[in-house]
Length: 294
Figure (cartoon, rainbow, N blue to C red):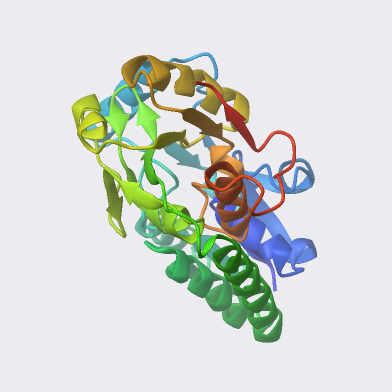
């Protein structure tokens, strides 16, 4: 089956299912595995925000959305030339990827008959369900079931390791200018790691908030996981959080690698967060996963 992925998490799922050779198209943001972006046709582009501050990025996004403009560009002719049979996309967040209706409209215009599967999880369990859904649609349901069973086994191991320990109150900052709470599956990651999420929106969209909400939640520590950033970028934003919330331990996390992309590596994220919350209870994550900033 010829596959096209229009979001990084779907690309990761495809490779985790051993279907990398079937993938013919990706987005400019698909960087895991690194070969995805170099070996596959790039069918979705977008603005390079490197060098922009978090506030500038937020302003650009709001300006584009207010004008009804897209944040991403679908290279429709290139997509049609790939003759895909299945396209993986989403409707979860217009800031994260092209909505599925944009893709379907383009396919209708081009006369392309590819199926479109929209992956829209709001919880950690739903993320695991999307892996099963991709496995079913690509003809490898047994691989998907084995992968999910392995991921659940790792989650169970973390739960067992932290079961009898106090659960620290954890605030997760997903953006800093302006501040955004943690939403969707992110509070589930904190719970699975042995923490109690505060100032959060479990199973709902992340929303803009105030620094006072985080202060009032009285967290024992703060995790900074800005969408679109790996550890270095997260650490830069974490230093802003440390200034806003003095006296509270602040940790930066490789957000794109471990937290914000709804794919198999969320379990790596649970293990990394557990290492922060419960030192010694679980193995330390690899270098480049987490860093204490304050």
